[in-house]
Amino acid sequence: MRRIVLVDAPSNLGLRPPVPGAVPGVYKLAGALREQGLLRRLGAVEGGVVVPPRYDRGDWREGDGVFHAGPLAAYTVTLADRIEALLRAGDFPVVLGGDCSIQLGASLAMRRLGRYGLAAIDGSADFRHPGNEAVNGPVGAAGGEELALATGRGQAGLSDLEGLGPYLRDEDVRLFGLRDGDADLPELRAAGIPAATVGEIRERGAAAVAEAALNGLHPPVTDGFWVHLDADVLDPSVMPAVDSPDPGGLLPAELAGLLRVLVGSPRCVGLNVTIYDPDLDPDAKAGALLADLVVEAFA
Image 1 (cartoon, rainbow, N blue to C red):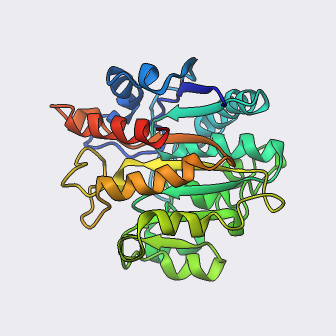
Image 2 (cartoon, rainbow, N blue to C red; image 1 turned 120 degrees about the horizontal axis):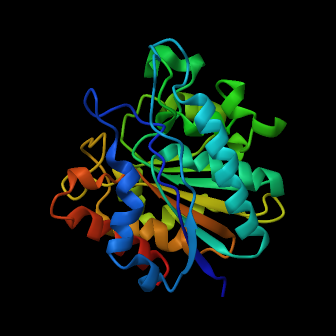
């Protein structure tokens, strides 16, 4: 069995301030899940912390591109270094965010090693880029743009680090848990990126959807794939502690069904967890649920 290594990536650089003068609380995600005994319950070994730069948007204004672009680029490279070393050693990294921009670190690490895929379980596609601003609004927050950046869409300072962009090919991406009627679905389908909505998962069954989506993410097509988990894929009735608690999300049993198949695949090389904000979860119930779901994925 591969050794599970728990790594903290507590970056909030990709999110807008929740209120003026405040910083997004997702940087506390890793600590909160560790408080749930995640290291012990996973039987994991300690992988340390990749410390992010300070959250400071300075004089950034709408229209200036992605805020924190320079610090985000530097952090992506540093996080990729940590993940790459673990993958080369044959370990299984579980990376605790942070916001969704940490996925870029995993994608860059895998791109250095070969051709890998991504199974993203997320309430939205995070596909905002300069070519679809009419649908998604102007770029700015990388936490809503990381899939676009990873597939080569967006400013080169983030989408083409080390001259390796795109880090992921469109055809090697699988999306799960988008809300029905998501505005990005037409563009995703035109690009050949399969996306299973909540309604489709509910109709066909989570395990069946995940198993079907794995086709094409196995050798010889790819060298493996990474799982990206955004807590906002869950319905706000069970996971209110996210920055965008949109109704119509997955229920815990449905998410568990996806994770069990995806993480259980021998071709899955790692997992990251993002967006849960302990500041919005005073009784820690949502954090306990999220920790339980991560542990169950490896059971």
